[in-house]
Length: 309
Ligand SMILES: Nc1nc2c([nH]c(=O)n2[C@H]2C[C@H](O)[C@@H](COP(=O)(O)OP(=O)(O)OP(=O)(O)O)O2)c(=O)[nH]1
Ligand SMILES: [Mg+2]
Image 1 (cartoon, rainbow, N blue to C red):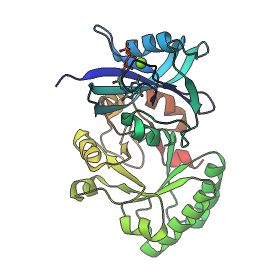
Image 2 (cartoon, rainbow, N blue to C red):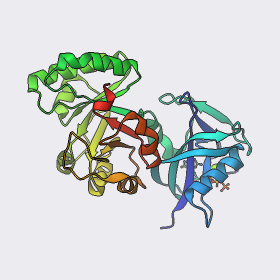
Image 3 (cartoon, rainbow, N blue to C red):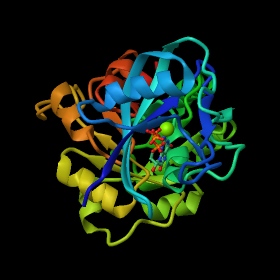
Image 4 (cartoon, helix red, strand yellow):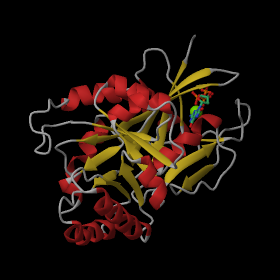
């Protein structure tokens, strides 16, 4: 089947707002809202097409674009492969050069309708923050709380409770305490591996282990389901199960998993290419590595020690 390759831009301002445009009259789905972009022409790379389309449609010169997710969608008029980029640097003020209407949107609250049907999951992905903090309370849950409060004050909005050595009763009390503090900041909490615990305490989601990915027949019925992956087969499984995002690790050698072979940047980038899932890079990273991770196809970075400084 012939697929139409499309370069799509999530043009994002420093305040987090991103740009949508309404499709001009005369095109399929005229009046529907979309991200700026368009079809890749013969001889172009997807990135070259992106730069050209944003010049033609918005009159801007792209200076910083990083590859993000890919979506595959079958319309009556075309089977499209949508390669999304995040564009965070450009020269010029975006203006409608092709009769479109432009509207800046805040992640989490889309104020225009209707949007192109292929794009619905994209808005949920955009509402996932850049940093995912994984708890490191160890044997001192009370001592961890000030670090959690600091991180929430500093803007952390996505947390995984992962405490492999905590006794069950302590873990449940700890997870409830993390959730209460997180909710005061509109932050979302996932719990490692334990779907029943997530449901008992009313957390937002579960972080499935790679082993669980292989065992589960269907997606657990929770708002957020994430997967811990280490290779292409596990990412395939996470996509097939309908997960919302994945962790891919270990990117670099890390003290928490001594001796585990690290993927390295090139393998990491290759594994991210063409994925529908947003992927957080995990292993040996700090928050300063966010841009580098994004240049290699990551949605964001997952941090253990680095989230709680
Ligand atoms: N630009 C864009 N296209 C999208 C999005 N979502 C989505 O399903 N598509 C589909 C709609 C179209 O079938 C295809 C893009 O084709 P297009 O008609 O906009 O292409 P173009 O800008 O090169 O326009 P043209 O020169 O062919 O008139 O991708 C999106 O968010 N942005
Ligand atoms: Mg277009």
